[in-house]
Image (cartoon, rainbow, N blue to C red; front, side, top):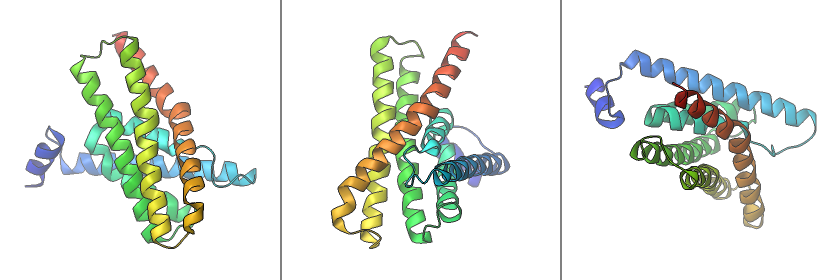
Length: 193
């Protein structure tokens, strides 16, 4: 039954073991990157983080693996927020959902565009993918995360807009510095085959 559900939702056959291993790898990578970024920016006294490196990592997983990466991004975000940032579990779960939704939305749009164009597209295609990856994931993530933060009473409403902007900037910068260079490198590598 589980294999049939995986086929229906993911489009191909996946064993439970492989999905569990991939999920564990995504969780570990996300947690490691978040913990390292937290240590780096905390040591400089810069918090909240001005660059969300894990956002770039989440986009890479979402573009490469699609829906398969969703459990890892979701759980990885929760683990990172609770362990590295000391976030309450309810808030960490909200952020996990928002980060997962943002990365998956951006990743799936790019995957569909690339598949539809058969990986050969010009400057307009590059601009489209650039726009999708730098706008959609950060806006979804920031909107969900800040809404949860406000609804849970962790911030007053007056801090919502500035917090939202900081979140968008941090995720956009993380995607720009981590996600896009890796995806570009993989595309160049694939084109050389």
